[in-house]
Image 1 (tube, rainbow, N blue to C red):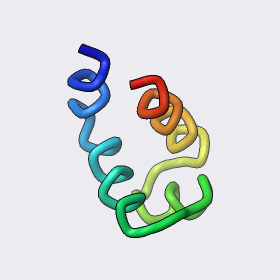
Image 2 (cartoon, rainbow, N blue to C red; image 1 turned 135 degrees about the vertical axis):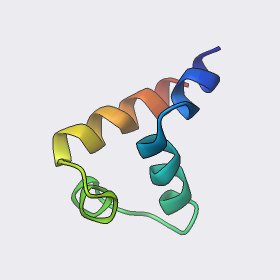
Image 3 (spheres, rainbow, N blue to C red; image 1 turned 90 degrees about the vertical axis):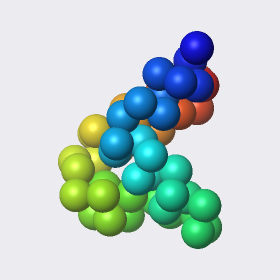
Image 4 (spheres, one colour; image 1 turned 120 degrees about the horizontal axis):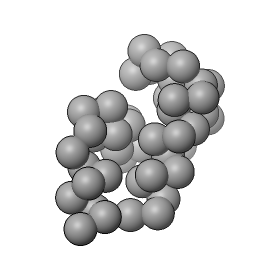
Length: 50
């Protein structure tokens, strides 16, 4: 259930697609996905828990 919930957000899917290409810092993820660093960090925490 956690995986489905984590994947239901378009920003998290975009982050996963980005990370599939390699390693990125939170700042780089934020810039590439056009979200704030705080939001990127929060999305990464949700993905980590899934």
